Image 1 (cartoon, rainbow, N blue to C red):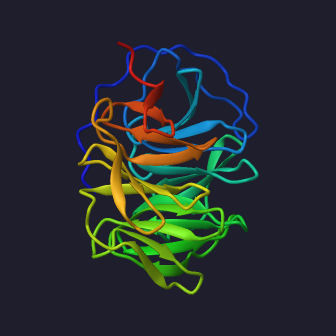
Image 2: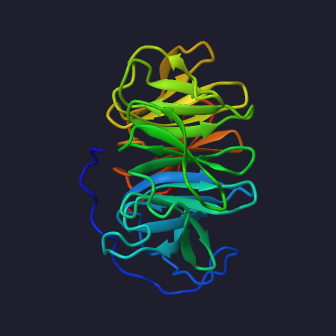
Image 3: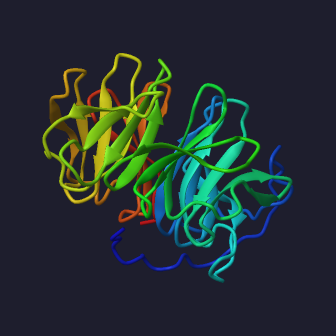
Length: 285
């Protein structure tokens, strides 16, 4: 996957301790800024967790500040060295996809727990189905996998051209972004059948998708610097576009609003119903 060069490293650290149900100790980083936030997830309690590819590791975001929840090592093939996606299950469990170790991790007891023993190629997104199992898009094998929440051998769900963003809607349907091929946005049935939703390549470089309760989908487009709004009939139009967006990638839904991870802006945005953006986390001026 092509990514723009990472921004400058944040300067200064202020130590501290954050007690979390799923993490024993973390560093307070209010004086730092995110470096390359690729993915964002919203929990049922409203909390946000962000995957930062260059930190590397995970942040929580609240009140305009980021707090490091887990910081990986700079050593390749160590957990979350190349974290690309994060998801939060209904029970609050946090999962992260990491291409350096070719695995998906459950974050618990202060340490990442591998779920597949490196059985996935390049995992780039995670969605969680109503049963709690994980769907994982694999850019290397061009497949979407199902991974048991407790870990185990991945099972193939479907083949898809350059699969990226995944989302399970309120009806339990799996949506997927296909960066290549004739249909850039699809739904995948329980039997692996791929149903095109957007049937023309209107997007420039789509990454992620979320779907509102009314069936409206939102797709991030890094090259077009926008979020597309896709009606239930599959028609797409630019919805949030241009400044301050610089290269949106990861998406989440929280309280009916779209949350956007923008690695080029080093920011997390919240978009209202009209697509107006408010910064939830961004670099200091």
